Length: 253
Image (cartoon, rainbow, N blue to C red; front, top):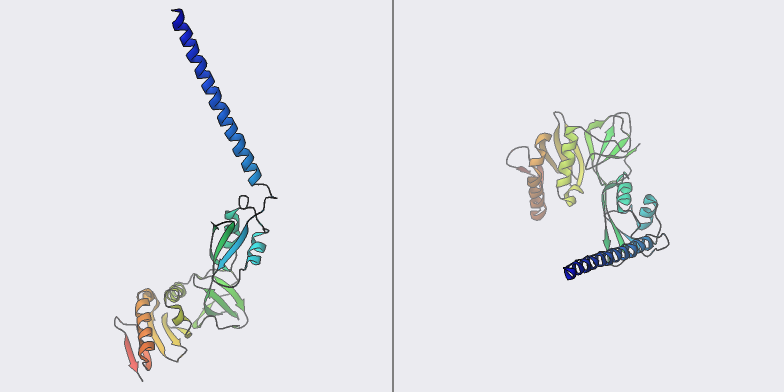
């Protein structure tokens, strides 16, 4: 009986010692991790740098640092990626932005800039440069460059930079332009929005392409790209091209 009581006491003592050792081990781990966290997040521990991948020219590293209000070198453990993304995403020039890490000490910022899709005339004078998503990028007295074709026969009211276009016919046209081959888009001289919201494109070569009603533009992207490439490859001299019907019609000169 006496030996049984002693065994129970010994077992309880071992359990208490085991629990104490576990507690001390966990405490030491917590202290080490806490100290490491504290050390890694000190402002003076700066060892990282920023790399920018930009599909345009508006955002060199210096511009990203300025807009995001950060300094190089950076503390990779302390800098807020979400802050950088939010600040840049609110910049009118940015369509999309993502961030990530690259070995060994790089914070990579990938930026997709808003590109101009068309110029349109404003009802109260001037011209607006509009992106593929319908955002007004600039409003000027004249057209200052040839980065995008002009749309005639359609006017925007009194827009301000940053406004969003919501007209269905224009949004359909912008979606169409965003899906065609960029090399083809670069060769569009003018776009005409005719009565009834019918769309006609004039290429820089002088060849008009009739697209028809704006409601069906999304169905004509593949046909448009195919017909254009066929004309370029075979050097076809066309008087005009009509894509307003189910089958394309090419009128030769």
